[in-house]
Length: 135
Image 1 (cartoon, helix red, strand yellow):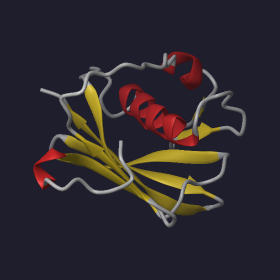
Image 2 (cartoon, one colour):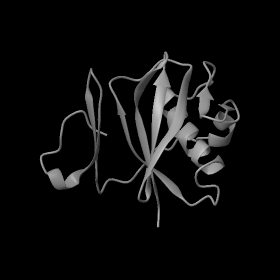
Image 3 (cartoon, one colour):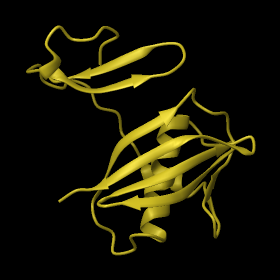
């Protein structure tokens, strides 16, 4: 991750932007030297699944709001739209800013091999999240 765009656009993998800053994910030959464990199932166990979506509660422990949004949509897809459980990969999120909890994630539509969800907070759509099937 870097806070400045790379000089060579070919190294750019992804970009995160919000109202305050941009973060750039760049490809590098440097080895990964740090890793943080991520117990996705213990996070998903905190969610409330309903007929229209999944509610992420205020109490998500030490997880971040973004980790919760990603885990919520993936779990929702596996429970409803793609119960055959293909390998799903997080593709993109569009937000003006990270919403406050609680929030809800709802399936919106399928676009070929991609899935779009709406992120709702404070009674309004705060953004969208996208996953794709890994083949």
